[in-house]
Image (tube, rainbow, N blue to C red):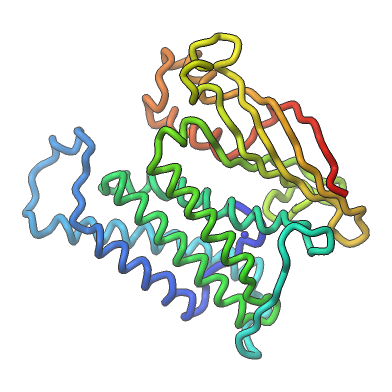
Length: 306
């Protein structure tokens, strides 16, 4: 799909209603939040009755802008053939060799929803929500938008509603929520995308499935005993999956990967911030990128499934 395979948008009224219904529930439920940020204490006091409305409007602006971005992209890339013929479903399978993309598209659905939650959470915090409320807003917004997208797929001429896609969407959003609410786990594990253009494609990280590799990464820095040791504190261990050659004329291959990489967040903190993590907005932004994208700092071993 965000950042990735089959990114389609909630464009028609049915998708808009699906997204806004959950968005309304989220914004209404958390409109009473006030910022916990200490810097906000210095702001001029406003009438108490205006604060919930202001926060609700800011939340609605974030949700509406995100939905609009998905809509514009989807109109341009995916739903240009329109809708018709009633609601249709399909069984796409999971990770088998006989599936259309060897399961890479399913991991793409999971990753897109996961990344969406991880990116929306700090955005909701920035407009005045507490962290817990921001996570809930990000989770509900993500689930609502992508459920609307999948339902509209069922009415589109080109696509069908896929139960597998819908399930992976929810799994990805749930993982994003879980790691946001469990800092101890977030310090230890990441879910990342590594991309390298495949021979049959130009640079197309959203649509080049053969160039996408999905990784679960364990960071030594998240474990106290390993963090204290200078030989291990910068290391990460990654387990990954990639399917190649599933495009027309390609030679199909599914591979598992085991890799060792460098923890760029820890390197940045030690080199430029006195060992402190998340100490400035710039550092927090860089760390979020490092959590979501695997840059070419890894060495892998491969085991073929086919």
